Each structure stands twice: as structure tokens, then as C-alpha cells.
Image (cartoon, rainbow, N blue to C red; front, side, top):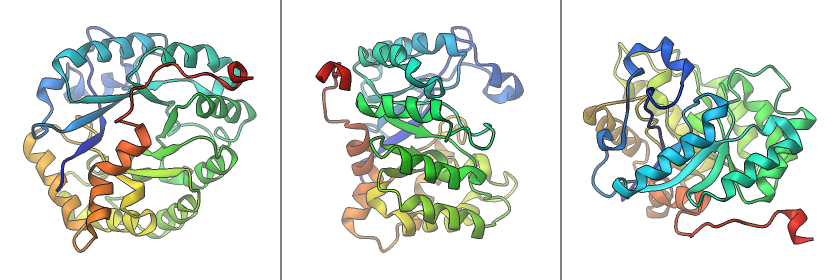
Length: 291
């Protein structure tokens, strides 16, 4: 694999911020800090918000940004923002615009009721995020992919990345319905995909590669390397260096025979473009400020 950007990593310290979901996952309910990342030297990382309590989200951003002095590979931050609050999210976006590492926002959608993404307030908040230059990480389940495709069509100004290939039914090996929905999503030009998170959807009693490869290959066939980026989802989907290397090897297998440009896109090019990793980001004017 070429030089990598790991587009999806988490770090947290439960002593500093409250992560209620960790109470149900004892193996993860402890600090995970950058020095434990199983990356080869020089691998740049995109931190994605780890679902701490909403009122601590800005503190999480500042804490992670403060780690950059000893984590020079930290390239960008995807922060929490409640786009479902509609125009009221503007205040939060204004705060995030003052944090140079923040390039995108995320509000978890995976357990929301049908129609949540298409509610007027959610669409209004999404448009606000896009207009001030933020991208959006969409973490949904496979059953929500068609709704996400419609959401993307209604907010063409917002760059959207689908986290974890839409959490397909990897353990069951059921490709058909997921693939059909992914095809609809691929028709939206503002959408790219993270090839990540397979470990969390696979059967842990069986080797990951045979389970995940059909889904990775289908994702690449539908979107191409130029619209895909690799992510580890550390530490949720994998923790140790051996697991990380197995994941990289699995993705390399899926890319066998691909062109150099396709491989470069998956390894780093898509993430660099999507999150503008080579740019120095400062506060941007809103549409209202431009007028």
C-alpha cells in the first residue's frame, strides 16, 4: 500500500469526557490515546468524534487539538454538530470554524427513525454546514442507505462521506440489498465512502478477509478508488498492530489489478481532497457574511 491517510480514528479518555456508550463495551471502556495507534510511521490520521456527551463535544475538540503537539500526524478533526437543530446549529458551527483542525462534522444517524435525515430541520442544518465549508460524516446502517441517497440529493452543496461502507451485513454475507442501495448512493456526486469498520460487522470467530472482501470489492466497483478512502476505525473495529496490518492487507487484496491512480485515491488522495488536508483552514465567511 502507498503512503496512507487513516481517515477514521478515535481517541478518548473516559476520565476526561463522558462516553455513555462505553458502559456497554467493557473492552473499550478505558483510555485510547494516540501513542497506542498501530500506524506505520508517517501515517496521517483524521480524528472522528467519539460520541461523548453532547455538551462536552467542543471540549473534546479542544482536547484532541491539544494532542497535536505530540501527535504531528493528526491531519484533521471531524467534530460533533447537531445538524438536526436546523438553523440553530449555526452557533455551534461558528465555534467550530475557530478551530483550524476541524474540517468536517458528524451527528450519528445510525439509530434514528425513518425520515430523520429528510426532516426540514435536518436538511436546513446540513445546508448550513455545507455553506460554511464543512463536510459531513454519515454513519448509518445499511437499511438507511436509500434515505441517505435522498438526503445527499437534497443537499448537493454538502460533501458527504459514508462511514464504514454503510455497515453492511458482512457476517451474513448478504450482498444484494446492500449493493442495490449503494448503487443508488453512488449516483450522488457529492458522496464518497470510507472503506472501514468491517471488523465491527464481521463474525469474530471467522477470519475477516474472506468475509469483508466481497463488500470492499463491490464498494470499489461502484465508487472507484477516486471516491473511496481507507480507515481503520481504531480502536472500535481493531486494536492491535496485527489486526491493523491484516486490514491493510485485506484492502490491498481488494485493489489487486487496480490502476496506480485508483490505488493512490484509496490510500490517501480521496481523503486529502475531501478533508482538504493540504490546506490551512481558517474561519470562513458564511453566506450571510458574504452578502
